[in-house]
Image 1 (tube, helix red, strand yellow):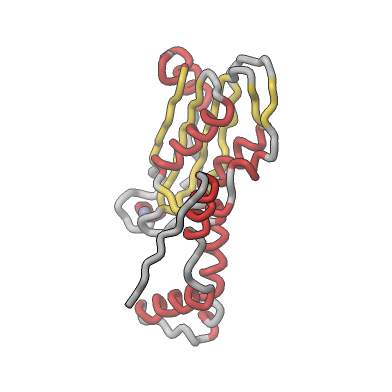
Image 2 (cartoon, protein in one colour; image 1 turned 180 degrees about the vertical axis):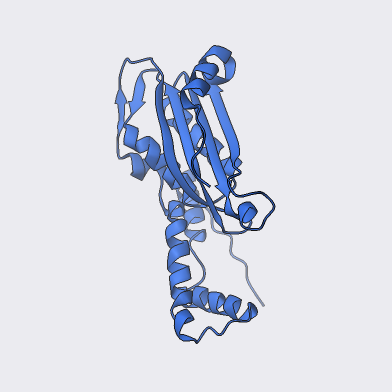
Length: 216
Ligand SMILES: [Zn+2]
């Protein structure tokens, strides 16, 4: 007989702590490497030949790196780098490199993000904007969600007058599998506040980021 035990939580913090514990990987690294070895066998390869001997470990390490954003939080990343400031002109960081992985195929999404906001009493260190993009990119993603997450993070942190995010990216699962031609790219955008409400502000942003993407 199996007894099920339902723990009681005294506070929201405890509940959240419990949930984050549940999200910790339930498999060992040895099991992950074994899974890669199984994949290689399924592909008709010999996982014991010299060139592939360390591949399961390398694949696991690479995937761990490419998804390290799961283990980062906005709080840790910002480390207090939000400042009170009366500036109210558009702040734009363009051409932020994006290296993400699509959640459907675990293949690269390579591109650039352009992020703008109009402050409303608070600003953030410019390098932190790129770090926020990186934190969300280093997870299994779809481009639409990545774009929204960046916009919502800034909206939540700064309560600015508005946020605009445009991501232009090329998806290797499409490019390499021949659905799209190399050089094709996908554009997604998220507009908040004045960027959503005021077409002139949105136009100003779009003019500032207008260019031909150079990546393939
Ligand atoms: Zn894909």
